[in-house]
Amino acid sequence: MCPTIRFMATTMADRGRLIVFDIDGTLLDSYAQIMAAMEFAFHAANLPSPAPEKVRNGIGLAVEDMIHGIKPGLSAQKVDQIAQSYRGEFRASALRTSRGEASDLFDGAFDLLKVLAAQKTTLLGIASGKSRRGYDRMVAALGLEDMFHTQQLSDDHPSKPHPSMLLTAMAEAGVTPEQTVMVGDTSYDMQMAKSANVRGIGVKWGYHMPEVLRDAGAQCIASDFDELRTLLDA
Image (cartoon, rainbow, N blue to C red; front, side):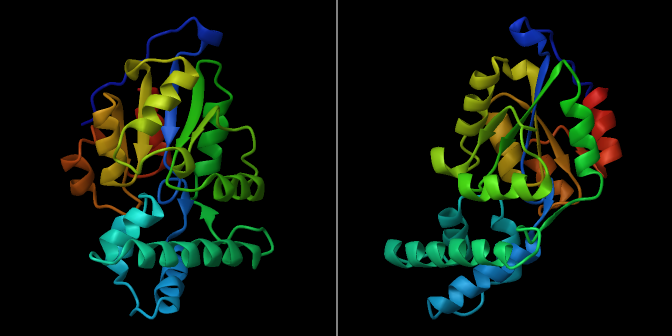
């Protein structure tokens, strides 16, 4: 049972709450694209294919931290080589599709975002390990331009679970932790929320199991986007 989430009114632009979303695994079904790009990058560095479960576990981190988790002990030079290859292949795989983005939003994600964005008392934000370049390409391809009031990305912050992304998002939106909720699919999202004193809602369809999300501090877990909307509007 999720505790009731109550948002206080604020005088800034009459906005009562900030809902911050992770991207990969929360809004975007991107595992296949991430796995393929990471496999390409490891092969380009003359390394064996990374274990799928390690790739899945690292999604949500900055690319370099993800690589360290997949194969500890690599030199900084080797990590940088793999990261550059990964980013290049990820961009190329997006450009090979007619939409410019190889991944799709999960069913129900776009509808929920539209509903929330139309609410006068709601601001939407992003906290993601994506780069600004990747984010801009994604929102253009999927019709999400101007959807998010604040966008916190890997270019400007330490990797999750450091709370920097959420602290900056709240400062930009002019809200307090009590007015903010973080929605994500990994333990890193929930740990980040906890560190920023923000309520965390986990999602069941992403890359970390529900019990892992709960252990990391998730106050509740949504099984689909309809339930997520109910939890947000409780």
